[in-house]
Amino acid sequence: MRKLRIGILDLVAKCPNRSLFARLMNANLASIMPQVIAAWCEQEGHVVTFVCYTGLENLVEELPDNVELVFIGAFTEAAQLAYALSNLFRSRGAITVIGGPHARCYPQDALKYFDYVLGFTDKVTIRDVLQDCCEHRPIGMHVAARQQPTALPGVRERWKFIESTLRKAPLKKIDLRGLPPHQLLQLCNPLPQPISFPILCGLYFGAPWARPRHKYSHFRGILSSLANLETLSQLFGHSRA
Image (cartoon, rainbow, N blue to C red; front, side, top):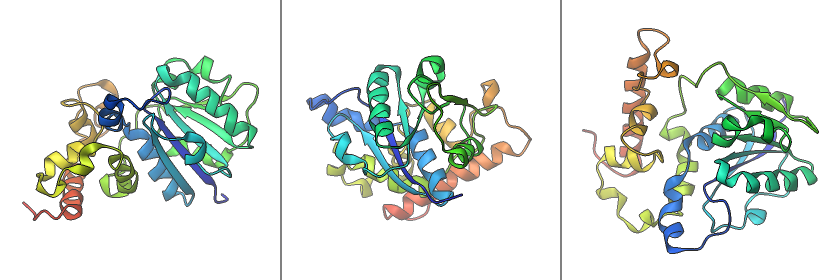
């Protein structure tokens, strides 16, 4: 597989927005899966540029002109922006991929504007897209795993993408070294509590798609949680508990 120049866009906002609320809150609405996909792409040896769009950035300037493959994560409210960006990057010769809630809910519509539309997405799914990486037009290709991923890259693997998003939030004005590790982990997990924390740690098995595939899965989740806490403790200078 040749080395690709990949752009990854997490569309938190649907249009430019410089309001006080957007400045304070939008960066905190970032999604975890764009960070995960960025980490998986780097693990496959590709060059990744990651952007969380909060409404304050100039998207035309944020991503390099020479990207060969662009992943876009979007809710339906940002679908028109995602379609416009796909058209822009396609006109520059790039292959485009959409994932996230809009792709899951309206794949038939998204297929008209993207080369790949992602359903459930795991590392094998991303590897298949990276290996194929070709035009599928006028109707794109729907790609989906059989279930949600059973493991995600931890904080250490995703930190460069987490940090670039945190820099856009007012949190940078707070002394993060004064926060206990469990609160730091929550800051690095953009999903709402109380559901997000156990999902991130791999401990939530109530839903059918999240039940462990074998009896040791929950132990792997606990170890993953401890590893994330250890990473954050090292990054922010906490002593080990």
